[in-house]
Image 1 (cartoon, chains in turn blue, green):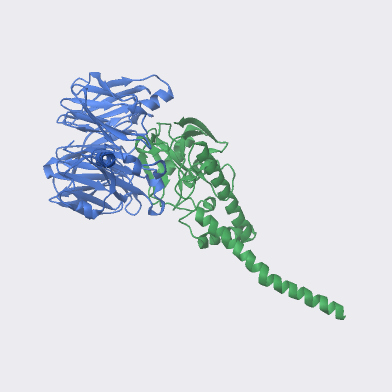
Image 2: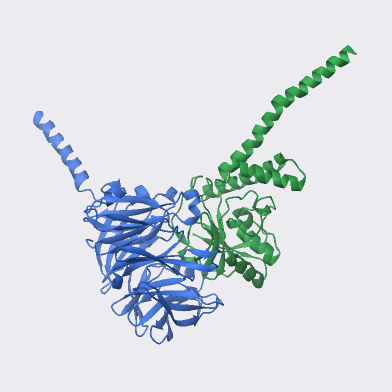
Length: 387
Length: 245
């Protein structure tokens, strides 16, 4: 009898231990700035998600954003900040950059926070190799006092944040080496000017690479992708309402080429569904090609020289039904994050060259933070070096 | 004579009692309206609401109470409609979301509506296309801003509408709205038809002013004291051309 009871007790204990230490759904813990100051905080982190409420839901400063760090063992650590629509999270090596409407946070061997001018709308962020620091760009709005548009740029230089104002509304942006590229409307609003903003010196210098006239009704469908030779952007409606084209602008000559990339059935619902689900990350260069991910989850591979296009692979249609979808690319890998309310989230790793799925990780506790009533939107996904 | 005196004394006492007990009761009721309105429209105080009611009352030669009741009637009707739409979308009254949706491209001067649960109820939110792929809108804290259409995440069942005026009038309305980028946000919905076209404005006021000034039409369907987002979507001038789901 006693032996039987001991066996049962041991089985229960083993079950508890299994749940605590092995369960893929793992636990969720909220972390404070104090936790982020721990130099070891990032050591076991694999994935970083950035969610925020949008500006229309930030009445009375009630907006929120969350950086969700997922560890190798599946534990989710949530760090709450103020809201910032279209805010970014960036990872470079062992460094992380986060932001909200009042602050920029950097985590590397501890936490540093920089209080900056209030911002309501993010745009893009990245890492400039030449200055060995992050940058982040905001759609700061029209300044009635100074009568000019303000896109504020913050760059990390020698460990400090430097602020500059780019006096344009920026429709799309991208970066490469020490330069930021920006597509800004021409004065008559009938075209775009492509600016190269040299950002690796203390003083920003600009030059216009070219101007490009677009047909009324045409839309810019991606951020800018940049390589050594050219700046690229996806547009729709220039030749036909249902046709996506790649605009390629030679950085030196300013020569503009258009390449047909993807054509869809010409009805409103199909065209709407074809829209990239990630404005920030759906178009990027890698190894002599450009990759464009459409709203159906098709990964289009485009030869940067010729514009010749093929479908490299397609994401699972089941995953494409998720409430939240986001992508990020790192080297030869493309990561696809999906989450549906009340269910576990997933991140899949695909090889861009072969199209094969390499890995899938279940993230169980996103549902603790991102609920239907939270009104949080997903604005960034980053994969850290241990993934 | 004695009886007459007694009757007059009784009437005076009654009037005094009325003065003592009825007036304060009435004052409390008036304040309650202002407080309840402020509770549904945070960002404004009961005092501000009383003040704007008083100003309109003077202009219209009516009592302040009448205006406060009108404010209250309009905002509670709007709340009831917001609650109904939330329920219809399978959400709780205090809001919920079916995930992230993007806006489609649309013609310059067209408008969009999304459910929005900012101010303690689903008051909705409207914005306007300033180009096929750009939106101009007024949002809390920030005021009037311009943003890429595909950078703007909205709720399920959002709609895109066209306004039945000429395309040049739509263009002029959109250009006027863009010229207001940088104007601050106003939380005052109950009385936004009576405030100036310049300066602070909320989302529905931005669109209402744009079409009133540049197309000569009043897109507020009920013509009340305040123009709310759903007053615009239910206007006879606006027609839904796409539902996002």
